[in-house]
Amino acid sequence: MRIECIAIGTELLTTGRLDTNSLWIADRLSRMGLSLHRKSVVGDDLEDMQTLFREASLRSDLVICTGGLGPTFDDLTKETWAEVLEDPLVEDPRVREDILDFYRARQHIPPESNFKQAMVPSQAQALRNGAGTAPGIYWPGTRSRPQCRVLLLPGVPLEMKQLWEQQFEPLLAPLAQQQVLTLRVVVGSTAESALDERTRPLRARHAQLSWTILASITHVELVARSSDPAALELARQDLQTLLGPDLVCAGNGSIEETVLDLLRSRGESLAVAESVTGGLIAARLTAIPGASQVFLGSAVAYSAPGKLSLLELPEELIQTHGTVSEATTRAMAEAVRRRLGSTWGLATTGNAGPTEDPLGPGALGTVFMAVAGPQNTKSIHYTFPGARSDIQSRTAAWGMDLLRRSLL
Ligand code: ATP
Ligand code: MG
Image (spheres, rainbow, N blue to C red):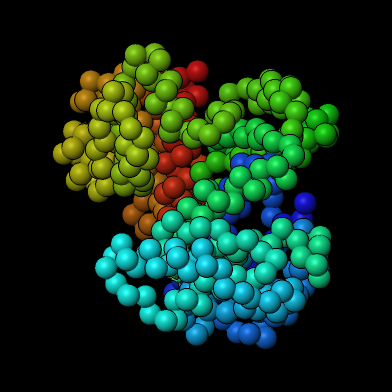
C-alpha cells in the first residue's frame, strides 16, 4: 500500500512551527507494519493544494492530510479535496448536532462559520472529533478515484491523535495485513562505516530481512525488519556472535540503561568525575528512573583547582601531566571511586574546542576516559571530530561504553 502524508498550513513552511503530525503518523503506521512512501508540506494556497492533491490522488493508495479543517477562511482542505475528487459537500445533520452539543456543553452559541464543518462530502464519512468541532473526513475510495483512500484530520495535534486512535485505526487495521517486526541493536564505540563493513556478510546471509544502519553522535544502530519472527531471532543470534562485546543491547535500550542494568545485576555502584563532559554522564544516567540504586554521584571537576579540591588530586600530578592527560584522568577515576566509596569510578577529560588549548597537551578533540575498578584502572584516549557539543556527547557515551565493557 503506497501511503503519503500531507501537512497543510502556511505556518509549517516557516521556522515558526514544525510539522510534528506527520512524524507521529509515521510512527503509528510503522506499529501497524505500514510505512510512508512520501510526505509533503503545503501552504494554505488554493492552487498549490489543488495540484498536490490531484497528484497524490493519482499516485497513492492512501493520502493522509492534517490541518486546514477549521472554520476560518484559510481552512480549505476539505473543500479542495471535494473538488479534486468531484464529490459535492452536503450538510450532515449528525455533525451539526455534534457542533451544537460541543458549544452547549460550554454554554456558548456557535458562530455561524462553525457550521461549515457540518458540510461533509457525499461519498465520505465524517469521523467524530472528541476534542474539537472539526470532524475528520474519510473517503474509502470515490467514483472518480476508486483506488485512492483519503483521510483528512484536524491540524491540532491533540485532536488529530484522538481521531486517529479512536476512529481511524479500526478502519485501517484490516488493510494492514501483516505485522512487521523490528530488530534493533545498539553498537557502542564504533564508526558507522566500520560497522557497515563488518556486518556486510551477515546482512548478505540474512538478505530476506530489510536492513538499515543509523549513526548518531553517541552510538550506531543496526535495524532489521521482517514479518517473520524466527528470521529476526536468527539474525539477532548471529549479530550477538559477530559483535560480541561491541553489542550494547538489542531492543529499545541505550548505553546508559545497559550500564545501570549491569551494575544492578552485579550489586555494584558507580561514581563519576567529569571534566570535559561537564555533568553530561550524570545527566544521562539520572534521566533513567531508579538510577540512584547504583549511581552514587558525579563531581564536575572542570578546572584545575576544581580537580585539586573536589578530588584531592596532588598538585604535582597536574603540574607534571596537565589536566588533559591519561595520568590525570586515571587519578580522577580512582579518586572519585575512593571518595564516594563506589565499586567503579569513571572519569573524562579532554579539549572539546573550539580552539586548541595553549596550556594543555590536548589537541582539539583529544579526550581521555578512565575506569577504575576493584582490580585495576583502564584508560583510553581518542581524537574526536566535530563541534564542541558533539565531542562532549560522544565522550560521555564512549566513556559509559568503556565502563560497560569492564562490567562484562
Ligand atoms: P482549527 O479548527 O483549530 O483551525 P485546523 O484543522 O484548521 O484546526 P490548523 O488551523 O491548520 O488546523 O492548525 C491548528 C493548530 O495545529 C495550529 O496551532 C497549528 O500550528 C497546529 N498544526 C497544524 N498542522 C500541524 C502539524 N502538521 N504538526 C504540528 N502542528 C500542527
Ligand atoms: Mg485552522
